[in-house]
Length: 254
Length: 259
Image (cartoon, rainbow over all chains, first blue to last red; front, side, top):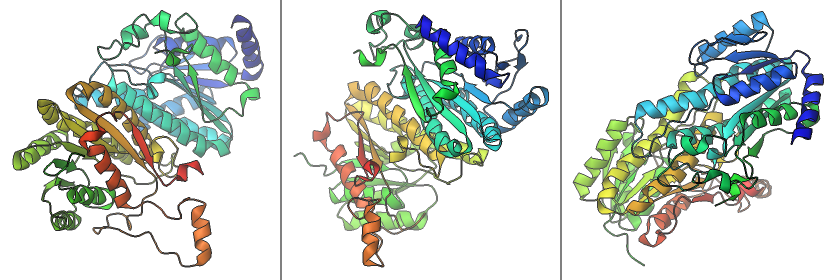
């Protein structure tokens, strides 16, 4: 893994050339790792904090927009374009898991979960993907979850959002591919902390988590970020409309 | 086989299209049907007439599936009228057909509210009644576009992708109450146009002999689906003998998705 990552980093560095990359939620572990890995590879980073302005690291543009609304996404694009130019790499990192059962899910909960995990991806895709299509090039990655296929037994609203996000990725691949935009989705799983995040009384899948992951370890956000960096290479331009399951083989264990 | 005679079912969006076909198919097995519709009086009355002509009974239940309280009340009303509720069919959907980049925000919301949240409210309404008796069949009409992108309505496909996960979660949560939750994924079904109040029972005619060959490039059987095709599958899943089918998705597209 270490050696391959080094190669990916070099490829990214050669090709990044100061391109503008937007991380839609830089407040969580995946967003932070993504920002660090892309910045090290030479990308110009825009880090969004949907839950309020956070201090952006030196050399990064910090913004604070609720991208679950079209108007906010437009405003974000305008601010970024004015300061740095158009976004060429969009990484959707919003992942917020609220435990809730099917029978106990009220309207406010499903609305919050769909807004945070799905609508942000949709309007970011419309606005930034649309700008990429006009320019004739761009990359979109959705950092999603194995729970777009596997039920959680603990967080129905999150799983519904991610099931829908998978179809957004496939539709966007059809719609934007001919305009030079590459669209892919990562299904991450068995990440550190997932045994707490998805604690369930219905499913035993997260009990003794490490023992159930065939590679013998849980995943870290940096690993997700490095795989995405590698796939940003022009050598991977035929990777499109794909879902890359990144879970150390976890889903095959039961 | 055990009979469905005397069971009670709710079918959402039963005034038109696939929902009408489901209501009629259930009535033909002696199931009494709650005919939900949003504001389609003519089509709903036509469905009720067909349900009665099949020798069963039904009642009209106008309600907007986006409104959680209304959906919960509708379930209670149906149970109150016929005395039980064994089968719930989520079917009502909205599909405005916009392209991804031009999709209006209000339709984005309306599609998810109707197709995705509406199914959640339906499952909740069914579950709270079925849990009391420890028996129930919840059947969700989705689409092949819960898996294959449509190219004509991205948010419709997103809503169907969300239903896929809702059904899987509900299947493991409600299983302990004797309630099964399953999905049917229709391909193209000929309903005679949006909002058609009548039941379509034959495929669209072919004007030229060579049209059949062209049609087979999309439909291996030489025809699109009909509402009765989906109705038959609902009856099958609704039977007590289907007890071990849970969290499943049955594709009903005549093999189209394999082409």
